[in-house]
Image 1 (cartoon, each protein chain N blue to C red):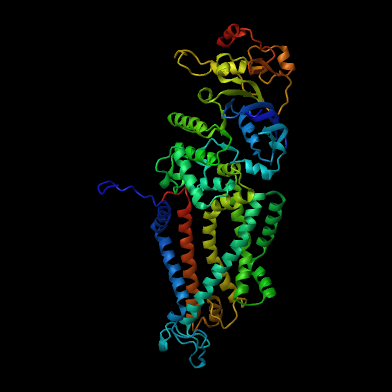
Image 2 (image 1 turned 90 degrees about the vertical axis):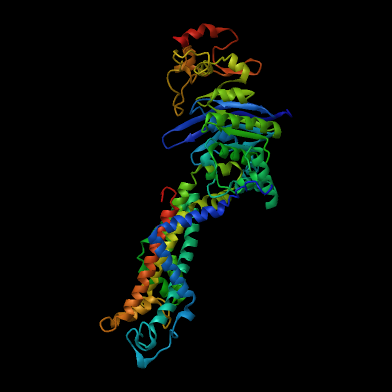
Length: 337
Length: 294
């Protein structure tokens, strides 16, 4: 219990428009320990970003709402806190970094001013002290000539540097949890690797837990201890990264892994893709959301929603047919064909 | 650090940014000319007591309507024998004070209203903007007449009247900017770092709305100067015998055939000043537009 940092129980998020209600996140549950890294993977529209945004209660209230569940952070249910306390948590105990470093920084203030703002929002410090912390943070994230760079504006930095600055701002108050929403998607591959390395080393130094939202399975492999695979607003499989990558049980996870370009795939082979597209989240369909794309779907799949079952050590799957048998070998043919 | 090493460039980025803007601005010849005109008028207004050749309100009924160049009167005298040049010089003060004052009044309240309407939306937005629409719909002169009737004549009241009439324009501009800026990602980032709505509004959104606001404000000064002239022309402006370009114009219209110098020079003063401000404002708009490559 003392080691558990975050526990999300049965989270539901809905978006309302004049014509439809979209169930963006349905019944999502997961937990995270201190210093652990959880990856949340899924395609666009799977609900992973909405889940991340919901954790900080940043769902735009104009048309979205957290309609159910609990988010227990260090023993407190975040959904029950008044907004004022929530503001104390944001940027302080839980921080978030976003996908586009170009747009994430305010263009009219220097980089130093923005780090200082994050610090002074949560700590009583003098301007001088805050400036010292800002320089320290820039050094920590590997920006050279930190003392000079402090007074530079965002447009004077490259994409990778800006993301480092974002990380510096997010970690300035040493949060216990860092939520990274596709932090490397907008960056070049080489820069990606640098940023991921940086995040790993900072995690060591600061002891933060990380939730990594991504659609890149390679990033998950590199960075995460655990992973949750999301589809159509639900988690379909979760567990240790190594276990899931070696033994994916849900047909969706299996399809995802199969469609990765690896060195073992011959150049002439066609990359197996999962046919079809994700369902319309505004329609409440009975049955498994993956049913119409699943090569193993049976009648029950269309009529009854599968529950998350613990199949192995900390390994959960939501599928009617997953057991520990080696069905996988037999089913390989179905995808290959 | 020994003597032979290459000195590390100290990035004076803050100065560089402003210097870059000024350079960009001045490359535009017309804008530079406008700036010169503005500075010229400001200097005249500030140093009026030293530049004027005669006391502006000293009447000399024996020497009325003298032509320019007679008797030490550079631009002649008006219908009360007062030196026209000196009156125009002091009139510059009125014009600038009213111009800047009215813009400050309109800009301050208009900006606050625009920020509130744009940021909070909903019923507040509707309430503010419908009120602004109502105010906007009033013909300016009618509005000014109504206000001046209530407030009475005088410099301060002129500033107030023109300022109030300008509020809707500012409110609209600022609201438009707020609507787009508040959707920017760095606003969401600020929220994710625990910033309160107030902080986001004044620290993040407002500074990013400044560019059009500055341009609009500059152009508005020109408008306010013309408004003051119009009000004075109608007899609603500053109290006589205070010299204002509009009141000189008004007095001058009665003598257009035989002594056109009154109306001509006061009219020219207004024309040149307003033109200068507008040219400068145009150049400022171009310089502040991030998408334009000069």
